[in-house]
Length: 275
Image 1 (tube, one colour):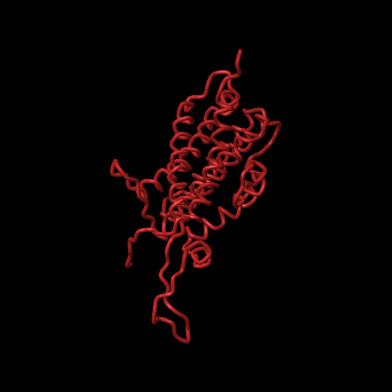
Image 2 (tube, rainbow, N blue to C red):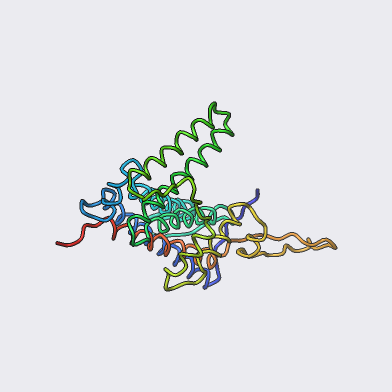
């Protein structure tokens, strides 16, 4: 696929590129802050949650999702930012960047959905629903790979989650008879969190997902399309597709906001109350 690198001359796009660099610096700081709490403090609310389901800790799943969300954006920075010690430059392809943002939004939303309830019981229930969902997805993968005894493997692990729910004193609640909400539903419910919204989290995720699946509508909605000279005919024309840093900055901003909300909640729950 032919690719062309060229200097950006649009002042607004240059400003957006600087915003992208600053946003990714915020991600690095948040990663370091969350990393300080990989081991939750004794007496913290997450420690209490984990004591109820030690084999399926709430903290471990929340931390894993945060690290996944941060890692996608760190990979985005390594993909497009060049720092030679004197100058910083950006070079992003129209393809790939939004898929990483989509994955980051997905993981951060899962973390915030898990951690947001004030009730320990509800956080534990959500952790078990996530675990049952993991079993479902893993069994589908195993079946596609031709692994033997997939049904038995799935049944044993699903039964284990029912045992964990019983030992966690969840008053007869059965995680096998409750449905995991879709990401669309999760993002709709989380929309109340951000105060400074440019694009709400759900449409931001939908647009980034369109890119992740290679959908033309998403590319047209996001990128600059420059018609090449002498290519138009009765059927259309040939266009050069160029990424727009303004759109990339907006979706990156929303991903960072979502990670900050989830990370802030994790740190709050992982910290022991002051004596």
